[in-house]
Amino acid sequence: MKVFVFTALLLLTACVYDPENNLKEKLKSPATITELNLSLDLSHDGILEFPNPIFQKPMKKLPPEIGRFINLEKLSLLGNDLRDLPVEFGNLVNLKEVDLSCNNFSKIPFIVFKLRQLEVLDLSANPLEKFPPELPSLVNLRVLRLSTNKLSELPKEIGELLSLQDLSLYDNQLKILPKEICHLTELKSLSIENNQLSDLPKQFGNLSKLKFLDLSYNRLSSLPAEIGNWGNLERLDATGNHIADLPSGISNLSNLRTLCLSANKIRIIPSEIGNLVNLSWLDLSENHITDLPAECSMLKKIEQLNLRRNRLVNMPEAIIAMTSITIHKRLYN
Image 1 (tube, one colour):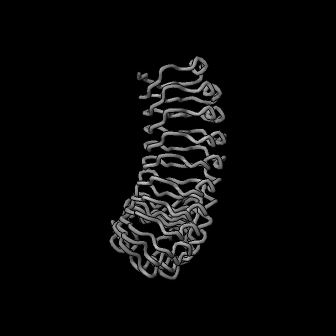
Image 2 (tube, rainbow, N blue to C red):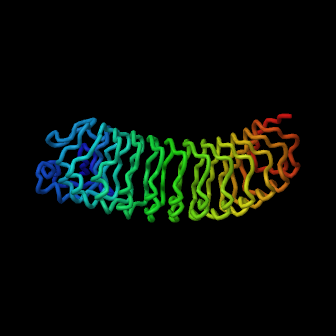
Image 3 (cartoon, helix red, strand yellow):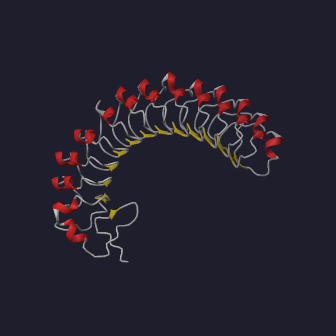
């Protein structure tokens, strides 16, 4: 059986089978193009050739013919030079995933909010400065990527995306998060590194289903006292902040596998750290630590312990005796 994938990279969950070798002819016909149930890659690298040169690379404008693909479920427009979308884009009512990253959108086209079946929306690497309040219309959204934009604030309406599980906000200019973000209790992954956050909402502990949390390279002076509610957390990165103390609630993070606290102002590691029984990677480098608690020897699954550029005076014998651990250290007096 001959496998034919036309050169704009049409994909189903598997490849598009074309035993009659007539897919190109179908694509030329507006009547039959609507029958195709497929994914379409019109990213800068994906557009090589298209029957009748409808799509050019890189695109500055998406032609209205895109509206013919009424059964389309996945669409990538990555890496073009788009600033807006045609009204015909609203015909794609079956879209579940859209990649608009690496374009030139200064605002989100209103037509996007008519795609009520949308589950994944990627708008990363655009010059977006504001996010409109129409956001809650995307009631089925599970993944929202807004990284590497120019966002200085988020609308409170973001808290109405109750199905959201993955939110990427890194590399923006956020100075504050709306308290409504704490309503996103289905979140499993939250990336807000490389912003200007000096504080987190008091209700941040409500995000109890988080498995991945990246707070690195902000201006945080502390972690939330409610950190103990994050019992499902597997990776926490707070590198490059101004954190001086760790809350005692850290002892509840029994599923944590990776903890990165490098480049902060930590002086004391609490004895509760010994409760992190699944921890395999611990980075405490570039702090002001002078001693480690003996309870660190209870971290039986630890494989990497980074203590470089601290002020360690001594290392507990119990930790040195742990044969399964690789310790990176440089002692400073």
